[in-house]
Length: 401
Image 1 (cartoon, rainbow, N blue to C red):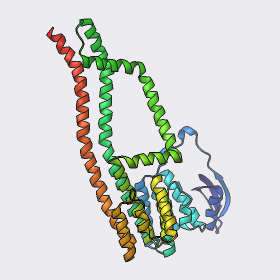
Image 2 (image 1 turned 60 degrees about the vertical axis):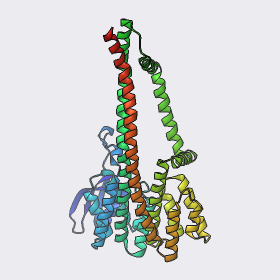
Image 3 (image 1 turned 90 degrees about the vertical axis):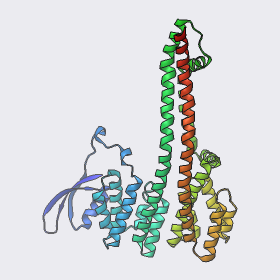
Image 4 (image 1 turned 135 degrees about the vertical axis):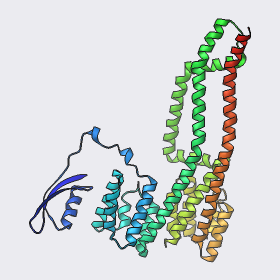
């Protein structure tokens, strides 16, 4: 929100201006702390709805969060006060939504709130992991290092997500083109060909009859198929929002032959990196496991990690508990944790496993792409070949008469 204000300085000079703040009280408090006497302050009325910005465009990209963490780390390391650093970053931020959030952080810190507590007021933007890493940095007096580590962690996560999304673009594009071409032929080309064949009185080949039948079916019942597909998508989306539905979905994904193994490795990367970072930050292993469980978005892994936390609380070694779930945590992962526990370097051993699995995931994605491409080409060839044959065979027959 924006507020127009008029103030009087200690020298008696009158000044006016506009300030952005989360509330009028917060704006008033900020101005008064600057040593100025407020004579009037009022909120600037909202513009009509058609002039408002669309909130969806205020979404904060992960790269911007990385940049925020790096900038804050550098400024803090340069002995710039945290509140001043936040205000400076807010001035440079072009994303309006993110700018407002940073200004709110600035106001909270100025009011005496710890930075980690201020961050926890924005759970949609700063994860539990992020907040606890900052809290660890505050406790150890090394906030700059924690912020720099967070920037690197977010960069790795962004790279992994980009790799997965990039791997899906090609097959999705090919399938969309294939479906579009298929529908165009059977809905627009074949009906005209059917009229021509019926007028000629020739025998219609079986493959052409099959495609014509499919065309007639889609024309008659296509709307029902579309409604059914939309209904299925809505049902799947709503089911996924429920605890039971998400658990079923997550279990199905983990059970897929190739996708399941890839998903497991991705979760092991996230779990291992988060746990390693939190342990190296001085957070007790039990608390670190709890936070790592919150960061994982797969309900099966989340439940397993919470069970592991309870067992570790009772005194069981981490590697022993991990071995009880070989389907989720590979023997190699458990073995490396065992080595780390014996040598007192659990965090380093976990990071070694994370680096190993990151390379494995990249190789697996490349292998998956190399398998998808020929399968799509063969499938596309069969589909297009069948459609072309259904069109050309009767034309050749008519030409031969």
